[in-house]
Length: 121
View (cartoon, rainbow, N blue to C red):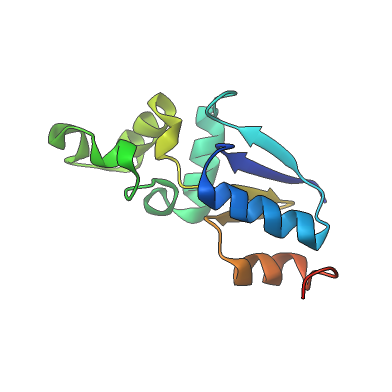
C-alpha cells in the first residue's frame, strides 16, 4: 500500500503527523502542495470522498483574510477554485493510504488506519 501525505512542510499539524508516522514505521511520500501545487482532479477526488466542507480549512489565516464576497455563497465549485488559487486553504494533512483518505490529523484515526505503533510507548 502506497501512503502519500499532502500538506505544507512547516505546518505544526504536519509536523505532528510526520512524527506519528515515523514512530509508527509507516513509509510515506510527502507532497508539499505549497511548492508542488495540487491538481484540480485531486481536490475534486478529496472533496467527493470527504466533502468540500472538510477539505477547506476555514480556521486558517488565509481563509479568514479573504474578502467577505469570496466567502459568500460558498459551494464545492467555489471552494475548489479558492483552494487551487491558495493551497494554504486546504486542511492539513491530507493522507492517502491505498483507497483510504484521511483529512486532518488525529492520532486515534491514524492508529485505526495503521495499527499500533511498535516503537510507541
